[in-house]
Every structure is written in C-alpha cells, then in structure tokens.
Image (cartoon, rainbow, N blue to C red; front, top):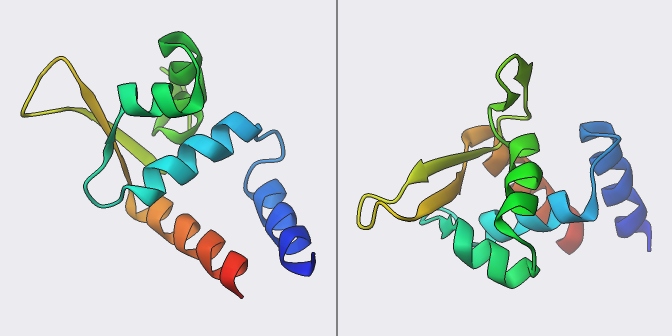
Length: 107
C-alpha cells in the first residue's frame, strides 16, 4: 500500500487534475515505447471514442490548445507506413516519468 500512496502523491504533484483516463493513456504509450502505439489501438484498449482520446492526449502533448502548454510527455505523429494512422510515443520527459512510475511500482 505504501508504494501506491507514494505513486498517487507523485501523480498529484505532476498534475493535480489528472484523470484515470489520462493516466491509462500514458501507461499504454509507455508500455509500447519506443515503437509507439497507434491512437486507434489506444481507443480500442481504453474503450473510448476518438474525440475523448484526443482530449485525453492533449494534456500529455506539447500543447493542450494553441496558447496553452501541455505536459510535453507524448508526441503524436503521422504513421509513415500508413498516413491514415497517428502514432503516440513518449518524449524524453515522458520516458523519465514512466520509468519513475515503473520503479515505484516495483520498489
């Protein structure tokens, strides 16, 4: 239980308004690092719509909205193999947070 409490405190310090959807999305992208995961795969695994996932991912992106910075932990790029898909990968900052979460879980 101690590890869980430490993890919750860490996440609250990171973003006090973080939703479980946002956390789940970050963890899914982290599990698929460094190859990335398609936005469609995330939608499918989370059972959410494209619009919902877009809102969730905007928090982790470099920009939430044009003039509002995001957390800059996830990059979303067009898949070069199939331009119909977008691929989410962790930024260096995202890797550091994901690695810390893994260490807290294991530690």
